[in-house]
Length: 243
Image 1 (tube, one colour):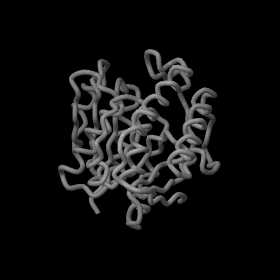
Image 2 (cartoon, one colour; image 1 turned 90 degrees about the vertical axis):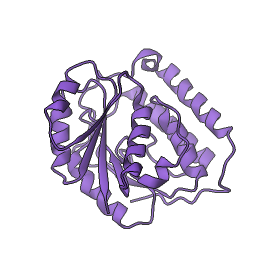
Image 3 (tube, one colour; image 1 turned 90 degrees about the horizontal axis):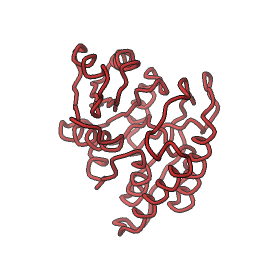
Image 4 (cartoon, one colour; image 1 turned 45 degrees about the horizontal axis):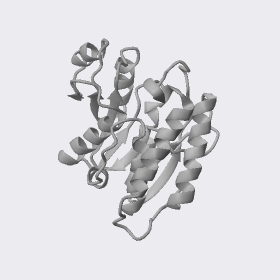
């Protein structure tokens, strides 16, 4: 089983060297998608060996970074792609748990969940993020027949060929709203894997109008309804939830 670990980054000079080093220590191939960083991130990446890098000449968005990583993994024959954020919220030493779950070969998406169970080392999420996550998770479960506990965790494993074939187009932070709809409508099997809830830097922000919680929630809902209005190629979801 060939596994690629993809790390989307934007202005992550504070964390990127350590995160990449910790990910490489897990023994998988590593891809960094630099989404037009304007800080020291590009220079730091140039000094790190034995990784692949996609660099966007300008900031295109978190969703576009994932879309490009999916295409890269599928195009190079990887079986699975694991995504991990570079903001000190995910623990690279948990990558083998995703690899082991993928090896069971009975799901297509393994989604990290920070709310599935309370885990050692967990902190707390900012109130607005937790409220929006709860609202969106409930919406996805009600409208798509899912049983998710965390709609927005970026720590995931995907069967590369399956996700690369999805017609994903949302470039920004609303990407999960389109992704979950398409995953269900293309009959992908889904499970969750518990991971700690870690927010070490409460000052991090989304940027622009998305820093306002109401505007962010409304944007997510608009993207969701737009995607729901598209024709479905699948008559019903085939979903497995739980570790």
